[in-house]
Length: 270
Image 1 (cartoon, rainbow, N blue to C red):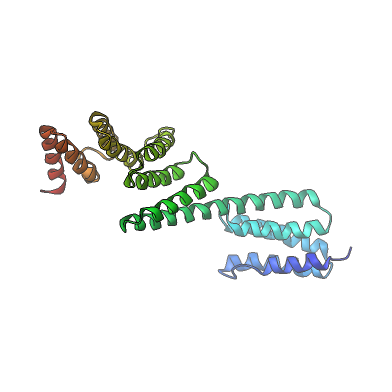
Image 2 (image 1 turned 180 degrees about the vertical axis):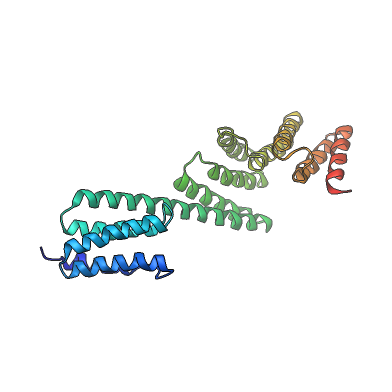
């Protein structure tokens, strides 16, 4: 059997890619290069042995899902195609595909996170239209990367709802917040930061529509969630207590507001 020039070339490129150190990585790299060298010389038994050894080393030194494991599988699969072991080559190729797909999804999710911060900057600068565009893109990327009903997507929906609220699009904001809350409510435990963040935004929306009782109910529920998560004496309650007290003052519930302010003062040392 003669070595295919195209496959030999591909093997050499794949085998030479990647880091050269530390020692265990260099050992893995050496096996891949040995596979390519044996293949070029037509020494297929030796090449197959080197490929199996490279797979074993990669499984030992790299964490599950590491793209270097995928690279090893593709190198060996390329060789196996050449010698006609197509079933094994298919298995390795599928495993490599799954690793790279997961890595791509993680990269997309990280892109969406970066967009989140960029959108927040635009909101701080008062550029709500730019922020909206960024948050829409972040939602779309997150949906593609982790799914439409994933908590990461809910975080980005919360940001999009916030900018819609800032723009005065109350109906659009309510729709987005409702979708985010559906996702959070489906989780085993309500997230004490992101879930409550959506709830306080919904409360602000209710206040703008004159629905005071609904707004106060959302704050009360949000406070309960955070108390259960962080404890009633946690400093992490400060922002919520401050905003809750302000809402209570605004609607004339001074006694309840004073109680919140007293708790806030105790947490801040005031």
